[in-house]
Image 1: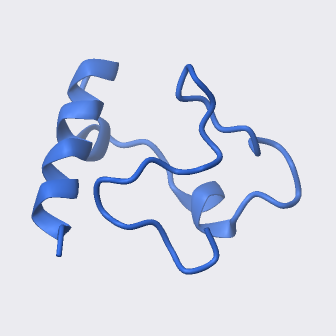
Image 2: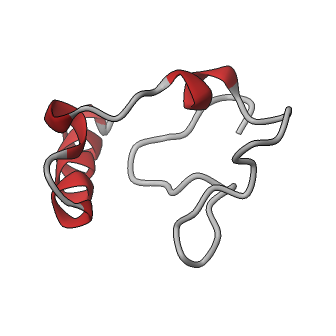
Length: 62
């Protein structure tokens, strides 16, 4: 997504199981590779991580 990803829109590189199609590939954006999981961003589970992401999406929506 050359112009960024709008809030509420899934990344075009996610597959049907929400896994990155570019993981480990040179064309993966540097910002994706620089993100490091942390409890304040991911919570303690996948469910918690998605809940936090939904909150961020709502907070940054236009």
